Image (cartoon, rainbow, N blue to C red; front, side, top):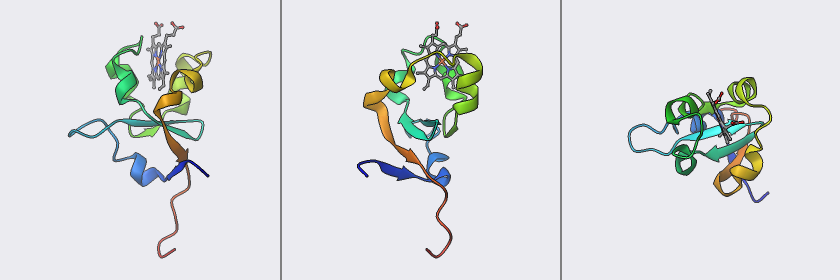
Length: 88
Ligand code: HEM
């Protein structure tokens, strides 16, 4: 696949703190939300509640109608995958 495979342990590092980019998963797609943050109509702190994790539920609770796939197309990093088994 052309996409990077992102396990939860890697996603978890991308909190937006300590100079790192902020990544967020929505419906199994992982986005770099850093360049988008300043445009988020709900504000940066609200958006960052989903940083470094799977924000699918938060996103859906607040604005399920928002077309994030189009808005964040250029911010797509890869696909959220299961953590590889140790030793594999
Ligand atoms: C509002 C986009 C993630 C919280 C909005 C709006 C857009 C948007 C377009 C305006 C919606 C409208 O006026 O109809 C996005 C995108 C996200 C994202 C592309 C994914 C990366 C989140 C997350 C949260 C959040 C994770 C927090 C848990 C809010 C809030 C508002 C908002 C509180 C304001 C709602 C209001 O004005 O009543 N967002 N959002 N968003 N968003 Fe997000």
